[in-house]
Image 1: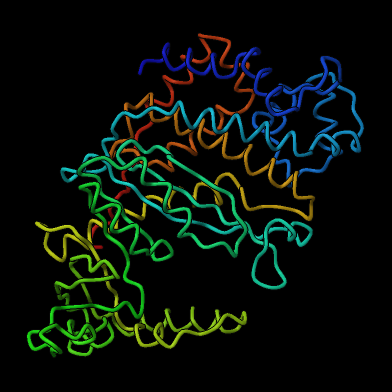
Image 2 (image 1 turned 180 degrees about the vertical axis):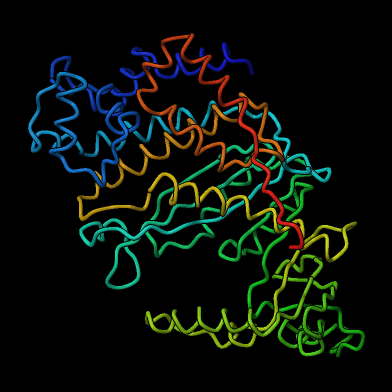
Length: 432
């Protein structure tokens, strides 16, 4: 996509007519009068360099007065951060989500897959006053952001904000409508679900997932017991698990097995490796921390401490290659790092729920906007240019973005500068 097409897409998305329509749908614009219009709220939340969950109301009204000649009291601004504003920001984000560029990136090897989907979640600690809507571990309030990312186009397919106690497994069903033949799904442990595995298999696609502790592995019993000429069901299969199989492994040894799993008895490959002592120590500390927070300890998890396991229906790749393929899931961790470290999405003061939600969606708009700009001008990210480095360099674009967008020469200049980002090669010190 060239600069002109990209600019026209954004001009349509952020046109006065479209913003007004979204505001009406969100019930933010109930009348034509009023000092603070929807486009001013969009500017304040996304393009003013303000973090609406860190900066004070006084700072924001002062900036509105100086930049937009809008005189409004802090109390009046606080009232504008209601459910209508949350819905307004959410609807803008969802509109951007539907218009993402779907060209292929260059920094990921497709390995012959049509799509590569990653699922993961990250948690954000919220003020205690948000607890009615976003429950967390007692006595906290926590928001869980679930994300579905298609890696080859680096496009966000689905995102949801949930209370911290809600299971990730319900979110994983969102992937079904996106899967086409020869897709690969990389699933974190929280999304481990036999029904998902069956659905992916039925769509002629593939999955690699972390192995859940205590998962039963079935193999046909060569010597079952019979009664009245029929196999006694309890003796039909031999049952084992990763903890039992891991007893025969040496440290860092990788070994694979073929088993059936789940009630549907799905045929899968199980890849196991025994972890070194320092990794086991780290996992032990995580379990101890969970126990400290009054979360019930799992005997199965303790038995599984020294084993790392994967389950997949993917054949034709070696065990080592399966592990390497799964490491691509790190890219979604990178995206969460951009969320938190670069955009400060988790920096939240003791504020009301609606203002927190408005901040989350406004931040997601900014992130998605920069992803689209930086993807377009580079025809996809390259191996030479990291996603995070490009995004950080492009931060300047967000300042008064709508003004820059309307000036074609200014917009082209920004695109030119971003396109010429070069990765600085680290100088090697002789002898090291």
